[in-house]
Amino acid sequence: MFQIHPVFFFIVTLVLFTVTSIVGLRLQARKHILLECEESSIRTLLGASLGLFGVLLGFTFSMANSRFEERRQLEIAEATDLQILWFRTTFLADSTRIAERNLLRQYLPVRIRFFNAGPNDPANEEGLRASALLQGRMWQVANDETVIPRSAGMIQFLAALSESIQASEKRTAASENRLPALSWAILLMLGMMCSVLLGVDLKSRSYILRGMLQVAMAASLALTYVDTPRMGFVQVGDSSMLRIQHLMDAAPN
Image 1: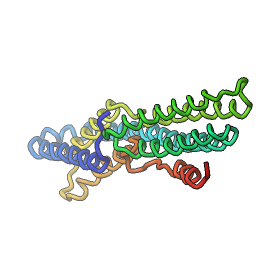
Image 2: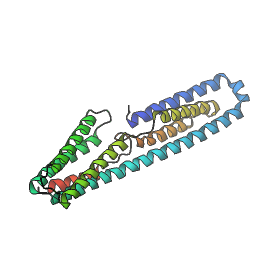
Image 3: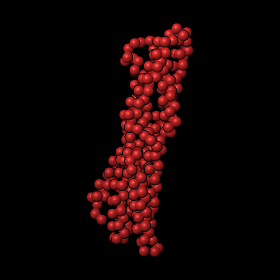
């Protein structure tokens, strides 16, 4: 999905709202007598539009915030699963343990780079391919263990590896799950409508008063950009994953 930088998004929405507000001011200047008769209707429509915009914005921000919290919890879950997987390599035979730990040391930086890459960065696809390849290699190394029946330690390791793969897929899917473009379009349309009605209704000649609502609406929409992973003003980060990476780098084979 196409994404733009949140600062640019704020500027674009502010320009749109300002331009539509100027359109309203032009209408006020040219149709003063006609609009005077409809003054109460315009104010009613302005109040209703602002109320609807506020309700939809609040609902949209609530959805965006819940998805942000979900991504934060999934980052912790993936790091925890990788830590458990690392510890369970101690149950393996020496050669298998060394191979699995080397693969894990390669795997974790790949995941971190994937989530730090921009939305249109080629590193996205490369990261997904590298992650799947390393997951397959870890599974194959464990599966090649020649001891039959498998030991309890090997079974626990395979269970941890399976949970780790599931956690990585859930986190990847959550990073791709965003508000639909239609929601943004409706919010922008309502914001532009409010700006036109405000321009028609506002009698003050102060540029500050004329622009306050446009800035507030644009800033509110930009804050909702928290639902845009890797580009929003608020980011999840990789603090838990980095702590596990330090653990792996400091541990012996």
